[in-house]
Length: 70
Image (tube, rainbow, N blue to C red; front, side, top):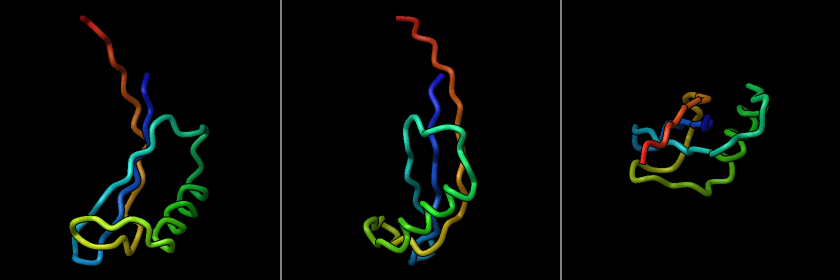
């Protein structure tokens, strides 16, 4: 099973943007995720087509099972 952590942010121009992290360390802790999202916002490193990240929207741990057939 492939797991990803998707972090979604609100942007300065009223849109949203996300950052996806493959194979996050588990267990995923809500407080740690919030702190990481706050650090990403404060750093100003990411800018999307709808502006810079201004606030955390949500975080989702996505668990996906992939079966190769060819």
